[in-house]
Length: 317
Image (cartoon, rainbow, N blue to C red; front, top):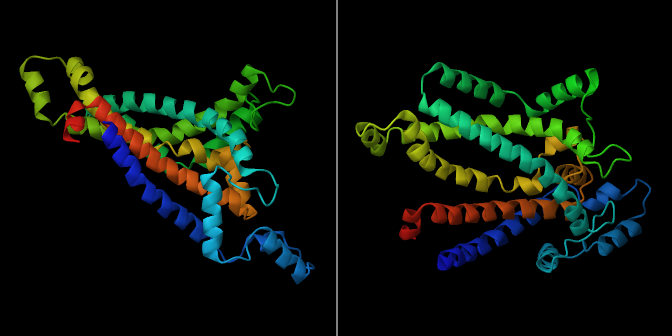
């Protein structure tokens, strides 16, 4: 097992190098640089050149890349060109806020999806299956921002039940009830956004398992529907869900851009969007690199969980 983990880590290193090159190249290929965003029309060319020297933009691209990778390797993500704050400090302050928003909504959506997917898949073609499938179709066709704006209008404006901006009401930074009130609407939006795709994924896995021979054998031995579903089918259905959970790991970094922006949630999403608007390239490259690295880490953790959950896979390794 340890050898397999070490092998996967070594395989991930070249991918991280390729990802860093792509992130850097995308910034270099932009039609303008950061100096263009902070320069004023009456700024002298000498001042612009001085700014380029200050931020290291006067050096060749490969030198800029090596300098950036060297700083990243030591944990120095650089400084925001707009706010002049440490990118590492800003991310360390915002990542917990994003996790606080993303994790409960995703776990809730996952739990509900497993229940609905098992129900729909085990009763394929029934009224319950058709109703769940219809709701999933409607959910997938409904934009997340529209759901967010409707909830803001109904529960935040018309009935004034829930707050709609930020994490805390002014002067109540340490109030847990106030935090839960601010969490309610964005959590509902993210849960609704995650449900349809996950429900259909679990439903298709359930239908696939019901075509396996072991289900027919259990029926021949007189096993009931509930026994087959919860003792045999569910364990095999949850195996592919591990991959789905692993692939969702990057969201703990990138968060939910649209939802965070609508509710002014002080997470990584709003930080990243603000950086894009001002072409704050140290922030953009850091978020892009870490979100891509989290995809690799998610795949690695999913493979490890596969081996731990299913001994047959570990034997094949």
